[in-house]
Amino acid sequence: MGNTHANVTVVDTTVDDVVRALGSAEALVAGGDGAVVVFAAADEHDGFSAGITARMLSTALERPALEVAVFDDDLLQYQLFVDGELVDEAAVPEDVAAEMVDDRVGEEIPVSSPDRLIAALGRGSLVAMADVLATDDLVFVSELHERLAAALELPTWAAGWGFHYLDEDPDELRIPVIRTPA
Image 1 (cartoon, rainbow, N blue to C red):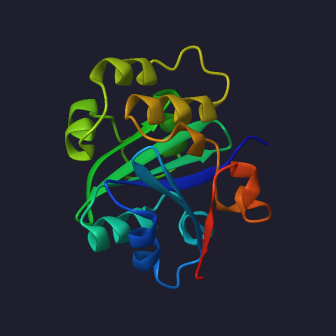
Image 2 (cartoon, rainbow, N blue to C red):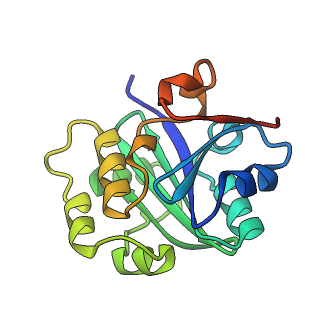
């Protein structure tokens, strides 16, 4: 079984502000590279890829919040929330997303809009995003998570990590991690 995880990156904020906004939510929080990454239990247990924490933090902090979820190292889905509203989302590779959606009536595959993503997030490179979306050379989708973070000028150290991986040993991340609720 491949890597399955989710995390949320919030830009232009502080670890302290994110911890306050999380309130009693169970999470691990780390900051660096101009952003704060939240590894929330709810995003992996109560609604995988549902944008629970990203929506809440984007509303509370009035900052863009990007959730990235990886399913079994086969599919990456991202959702970007601004002021609590979903403004961009995608699922890649598209052929894997199509297989998953075929089983569900009425669902459409969310298609990436790099222009919209970069504009709403306020950072990133269109040239680098083109490389991210070219998935022909991927072995594991976790690699795509790292490429996406780099293209959007977000912390690459968060790629591949989720709450259930770090819950037992947060030191694995190799940067300071705060557990909430404190």
